Length: 383
Image (tube, rainbow, N blue to C red; front, top):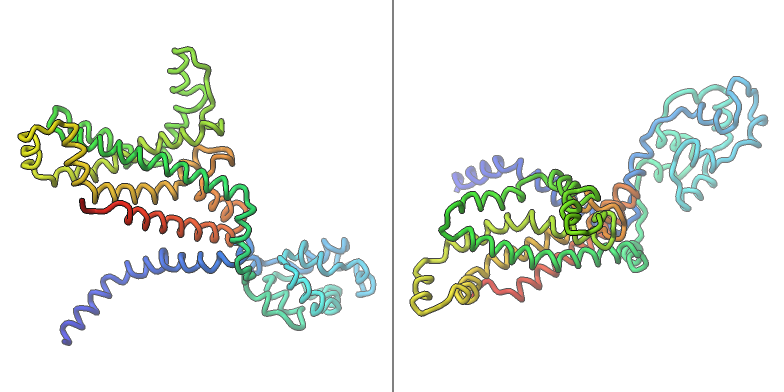
């Protein structure tokens, strides 16, 4: 018993780095996103109260006079606007509740007296400054705590046109790309599994795009799709006028979809190829003896026996398409063709609405979970 316990402890010690990595970078972010989805969390405000400033310089700028030119509080009190000073000169973000606390509890007289006496010419954190001059309520300014909004972020989605546009684009993208890339990967796998000359080169050629950097692939296709690019030059030989494929909202998303199909089909080809090589040759031989044509072998033998791989590829393809971001980020320049993952990024890192972005990510998580569950119910692994 002691030996088994020692082995278990040793195993956990060796696996501790992986366990901590999963907890810190996977499990914690999931719970944090769930919490933030019910708040107005803004990452731009999270470090706001830790910012340092010089109170004397801020007051000099606010009042328009130097400290050395002031001899009494009476000279400056009429020019002092408390809320304006706290919000714009000090830089503290105030909501309605915090504004009320400041108006009722801030010791303006003490602040102005310290300014006249020359006691403010020092660096202070915003949290320290508020703690020093608030009679009560300083706890609200010690650290950033987002406001709890309940279901407001989720209600906001019903009136958010870009949420509806991005969700529609994501479903459209998934519905087209997943079946096409799955079927193309299956066809490529069947071709790669045949005994023909140059089949190894064939496998490598179609697999390379799946292991190439997404940024590099995107830049290549940007050059192909640009107005003076390769595609328009080829079409020009047939009399077509050049088209800005990525700038036109009607062609931008389909262009990215074609790129995604090309880059992922080779990856899923390997999955199908592994499944094909597990099918015994005796089954093919028996089918040929019975007079089965190649077409019937494909539909009646290969497809049924590859159901586990088809389910895996369809599931992974759906998850990948629902989360598509990098190609949209690099190539799409208009808001009519954005996907939900890109819209989550925009809200979180450009607009600063991390709470709303977390709510969007939670909705996306639920959608992917439901789609995966439906796929597993509709497509059985066994024939």
